[in-house]
Length: 182
Image 1: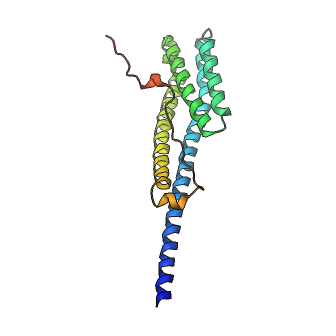
Image 2 (image 1 turned 60 degrees about the vertical axis):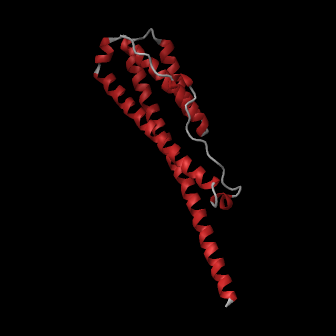
Image 3 (image 1 turned 90 degrees about the horizontal axis):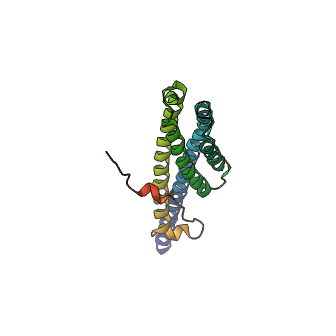
């Protein structure tokens, strides 16, 4: 009788351990999937940028510094190898795109160009998707980190699973409220 109770306890503990372990693996895989979604949107943005730059070049050939900065920032995103490097490069690219759109404001004919408007709209849509994907990634990272850092997940996770880093804003200037002047 005692042997049956011991076997039952061992079986219940094994099922419990397997259940927690599988949950941690699923959360880890969700983080990977969320990162891949960000990566896909970053690639979409990188694919749109050359067309946008070429359209602007036709109207603003003397704005080469801004166009060069956008091109360099795009290359940095494409050449980044780690998620952290891609996050950093993506933040820089977002800043240079703001400069590009500021240049476009100076050229009414460019702003009215249908191709430019379509590209700007697609890029804006992609930026929104990137923002959503970053939030989704951060949610997955939070859930995963909670699973491996709280009891009993931390016992099951042991040293095999490491905490992940979420997407962070690296440019403190974007945290400041814009000034509106009339």
